[in-house]
Length: 243
Image 1 (spheres, helix red, strand yellow):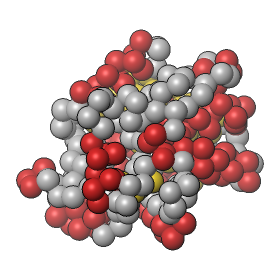
Image 2: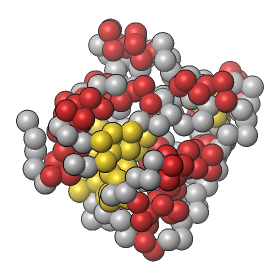
Image 3: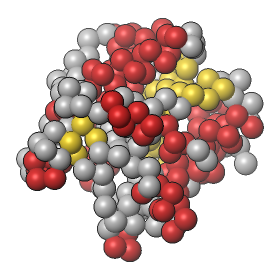
Image 4: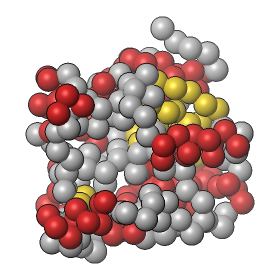
């Protein structure tokens, strides 16, 4: 039995793992899906002071208060930087880091710092989020939202997305723990929609010797391709693809 802690990305909440968690549990594993401060059912806690350190503390608290060990810590998208920050302080509790179409940071980087000079999220926050909230994604025509195009999935997802605190994207991460740096990792790239930024993160993961996987789906694989994602997570744990 493995212990999975699945950490959602920006605008999401623990709710986004609703398809994945039951399948992992049916396979005999323990699953936790924390919601980060200010998001999902914790949206009432959203303030301009919520930053990356807040979300890193959320994950560390989950690991410590549940006394979890040998954890497979999965971070989707923005949460890649969150799980890496948590590993700095809780590496003894972690067995493996899994980055799902996610940020794989180096020390001193922030999400916006590695995003490029235009920084559209900061612009969106200034125009539509009082300068500190990044508005939740809107439908992209036939492209749906974050690569989710199935109408039922899309309706369910859009209803639950919330604004995201800009400070979490601006705060750089400081990495100094050799134990955390030595943790084994895996990277899962969603290839259904080309994204050069995540492709660069995948390239970085390969250079670091991480396991590498691809899913031919949009960015939110846990919603659009949960069975494929579960198969990969189980392969990471047991060393072979599970049907």
